[in-house]
Structures are given as C-alpha cells and as structure tokens.
Length: 480
Ligand code: 5AD
Ligand code: SF4
Image 1 (cartoon, rainbow, N blue to C red):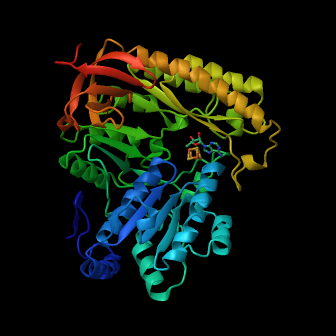
Image 2 (image 1 turned 45 degrees about the vertical axis):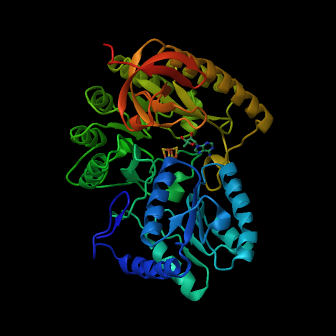
Image 3 (image 1 turned 30 degrees about the horizontal axis):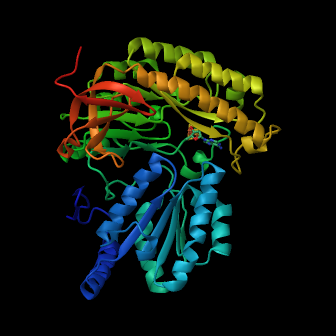
C-alpha cells in the first residue's frame, strides 16, 4: 500500500492506473538520484471549492508519481491549471496565464503543460487550445482526473499532445489519493454534477449529470480525516440537497447528515451548496437537532424578483424562499445565512433589482457572494435579450455591495461582548502572535494565542468588530 504524508491511499490491485503511476515514479526516482532533487509540479486552481477538491486529488496522484510541489512556474517540470468556466473573466484569466507559459516552454522543452477542469469540457475552448496554444501538452476534463498518469506517459513517450475530455455518465472513481494542505479543515465531495439547468449556468454542461457517492465511502473518508486530526469537514456538491438520488438502499441528504453527526470525535461539519427548491424543513430540523453541524446555511437566492427567478429556472418564488428563511431562523435563532446574488440577469429592470435589495434587507445575510451576470455560450440565458448596459449593471452592483457592507458589519457587531466557541485555523499573516479562527457562523475571529493552539476549539470572548473580523481574547469557558 502507498501512503502519502497525509493518509493511506491506494491498495495494490485496487486501481487500474497503479502500474502507470509506478512507471512514472520509477522515472522520477531516477531524476532524484541523478540530480538530488525530485521533479517539481506547479498546480494552480481557479474557481470553486469543487475545483480545489479536484486539485487535491491531482496533487495526490502527482505525489505518488514522485513529484514535489513548487509555487514558482520557472522552477516547475510540470505545470497544471485547473480551470473554471462559470464566468467569462475566469476564462480570460486562464488564457492570460497560459499565454505567459510560452516563454517557459521555449526555454525548457521538457516542461509538461496541462490544462484541466470545467473550461476543457467545452469544444470551442479545446479547439482554441489546439489552434492557438501549441505548447499545451495535456488537456483533460472534469471526469478524467484518474487518467492523468496515462496521459503523462503518452506525452513523455510519444511527444504528442493528448486530450481526454470524455464524460463517464454515472461513474465515480473512488480511492484516488488526496493531497490536502493545512490539517485543520478538509473538503469532502459527496456528489458531483448538476441536473438543475438554471438558465444562466454552464455547470450542468461541463460537470454532467448528478451522481452521489456511496454513504459508506463518505463516512469512511470523514472518519479517517477526523482520526488524522481534521476538525472541520465541508461536504461539497453543486446541490447537496439532492444527495442520494439513484442510490440503493435509499438515503437522502438529511439522512446522510444524521449518520455523519453520529461519527465519534470532536469536529464540525459544513456543507455547500444548498438549492432552496430542495431545502426542506426536515433538513433545517436536522441541523437544529445535531451536535456537529454548524449553524450556517449557504442558501443562494440569486435574485428577489419572481419574474427573474422564473426566467432563471430556479423553481422557487421569493415568498417560498422567505418562508423557508423564517422557518430556519425560528428553529435556530443563531443561524448564519449566506447567499449568491447575480446582478443584471438578461431583461432585469432596476425595479426588479430593487426587489433583490429588499429581500436582502429582509433576510439580513451575514455575507454574500455577488456576481454581475456573465453570458455563457450554450446556456438558455445567453439567447435572451439583454438591453441594460454594463455601466448601469456596475452601478446596481455597487449599490448592492454598499447595502450588504452595512448589514454584514451589523451582523458582526451583534456578536460583540459574547463568548463563542472558535476553531483556530492558522496564524495571521499580517499580525505576529495573533491566531485566526472561525465561529460556527463562519465569522472570522482574531485572537492573541500560542501557535500550538491551531486546530483547537477554544472559547473566545469577542470584544470588537472591525471590518470583516471580530477581535477577542481567550476566555475560560463559553457562557450560556
Ligand atoms: N454569471 C454570473 N454569475 C453566475 N453564477 C453562475 N453562473 C453565472 C453567470 N453566468 C454564480 C451563481 C452561482 C455561483 C456559483 O456563481 O450565483 O450560485
Ligand atoms: Fe448552476 Fe443552478 Fe446547478 Fe447551481 S443549481 S450549479 S447555479 S445550474
């Protein structure tokens, strides 16, 4: 069995790509003996937590192949960008970054350059890379991570560019190695893909249909992480609320949460993202009755106008959303709510945008992820008339930020003077002697404390809210 520094990974014979990994490892060990240095890999991740989690698997594979990691592209023997397609500016940044690699490849023809992730699942992008970026060696898609060792061997042996953007419907590859950083917080995917087809969103096209992991595999992974000392597990999926579709025996998301809550050990659980149309009172009751689930719900509303919600194909109304929020607030008065908002969906009027502001005032979110609508080729919304110009949308966007700034600050201030359990997760980069941490509500806390407390749950007396943090001191015990 192979082990990486952070966990047990591949059982011999369990996994078809094992021999390819062994071959690459043998070659890389030769480099190590010859030069005294292992070959270096540079991995950069764009986009969401699902991509971060995929990159952890890619890094796991690279470690087994004998690579060490570098933050400097100029030092690297292998460079990989894991890309995001959700908005146009994410795509432009990737192309900008890839453009900069041309010089490196000229200086070092042995360098291997790979691109993967959501952008690679679009034919027009793959064509553009084939035509305009001839120094890119490997392109693989969101469902082909496990093929990386084989693709690398092909490039090394044939010196030809290789592509694998196949979609493998309904298939999940378990037992991939995972290379996690940090040691306090871990991401655990529970399902992949999305069946919702919100009209603005490219995700269902690039990540395929929903498929859920077996509960035993998830529970085993979490148990292993907790035994290694991880203190916070975030369950990932495009729509975690539809977890379990197609699994036998039947299980749903609240059922999975209950099983996780019963696992032994001292740890917190978060999850994202919850689609409001599938968020049930049963899910809220499950959080309220649990010991380990954080009092935090990320529940993207996207906008506050029923007309726009319908055109977005969100399948809930403003009223249904607000009633769900009311139920959740009643069940858990200390619940933190966060959301995603899109400004300037095609055809949105200023009056409709004001309905979004009004909803935000009613809900009082702790924080928001805010986006200006970006048309994505092949989505329905990209065909809709979009008369409002970019300048006007930017003005609305600033209005939204200003409102949320004020609301968010008040939410932080409401915690002044209280004592909360905080999970300390690291040392402040800017302030020596200060540790950072998070409350269950995911509020950022700064507290003077010794570094060996990183990874501990501690009571903190929160004294003062400053912009986007609460400053406090270690307390004896939590009040109330
Ligand atoms: N334009 C702007 N924002 C988008 N999102 C998804 N697609 C688009 C788009 N085309 C946002 C949504 C989603 C978040 C992950 O990204 O708010 O919840
Ligand atoms: Fe995109 Fe909607 Fe699926 Fe979220 S639920 S990934 S916004 S299609």
